[in-house]
Length: 469
Ligand code: NAI
Image: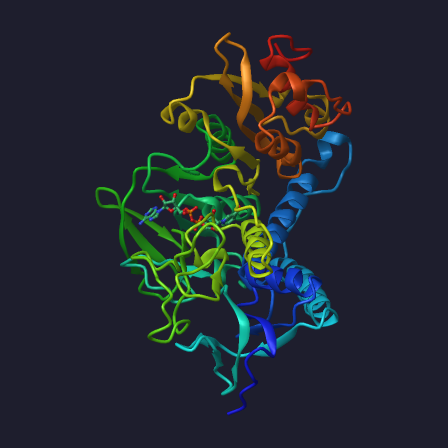
């Protein structure tokens, strides 16, 4: 066994996903000597089997829709045909390119990437499955999450799959049940349906996209319905019965209803991945739900050990992992780290139509006791949306009501429609700066753009709209 001496590394990170690699890059930029222990390749769920490959397939679906609608623009392109193996190859090229770039970037900053599974020992060293044991002045746990599963739906990788397997299918099924209508379920349902797969979503709660504003959900649900995606809410799933001839299965749900499909996609959330992470006696507390417990500066209950990303009980978003990594490293450096305000992080869901939001929904603001002023601007009157032919969407602003009845600080902005994930920036700044609509409305929005819907809604909520009443 090779053991490097304590202090050789300023920081040892377990897990090379967004939380872990961001911490490594940020720490190395600050002059720290860093090692990252990673059992696969650096990049994590987001780059290798999550956000990036899913968005690639959503882009394939977007190209398909554009070609299908080309005739409306006077462009004869014929009926598009999908060769999913080519889509897979392209997705893999994008992922591989980014993965190689990330590895190169880390190496160029002097970060050592050590291959193997890392375990924190009671003496706060990191034991690697290769047999090596390394020490560092600071340790960061960032081992991420894995898909949750449910009883009655054992993942076999062929008929019952999770996002992990779906993203490497070479052929599209002709039908699928998606269990769970959260972000992952809706993104998958959206692109698979656009590419011709008959989709049924089975969701246990009264609506899909549970954390989103109800007006936004209505727009998505209407678009899904128009495109033939069946959404069944308030539904319990009981199990499935594989077909005798070996292909496909019958899902049993609700009051004994049955649905025969080629594939079942289980997307019921992700759980923290702690298997083998902590040897007994580390002093790191883990909650009943399996998350590593941290304080606002990402410190665990053990001195010198921090944790970030999907391993801790905060929104499971890559950019939240990045932000937590910066907080943790600043804290290690003795700098004044501003904790992440989890109530005001940006959320983006890339189904069609896209969803983007920040801050409180109208329902959440009301139940938190705020009096609110609300304005909604449907995209039907937006020139750019009309030019694109994509008018399914809206911008909704929720502001605190001042005693004089005027809108005060903006509590939340909720968007649904084309490219809203690229337009959330100014909404994010508004909510986090606690700006009031009158202040925001002074700024000029370029015309014609999709982003002007945000500015128009801010003008309108002050009572003096231009195009929006
Ligand atoms: P989720 O927690 O967002 O949604 C899971 C859904 O499954 C919920 O609506 C839940 O009610 C439902 N569900 C749970 N058990 C069920 C059952 N037995 N039968 C029917 N429905 C059931 O989890 P998801 O979509 O798997 O995503 C995991 C994490 O990754 C989330 O935190 C999500 O925010 C994040 N993510 C974010 C994305 C984005 O921001 N674009 C994209 C993908 C994931």
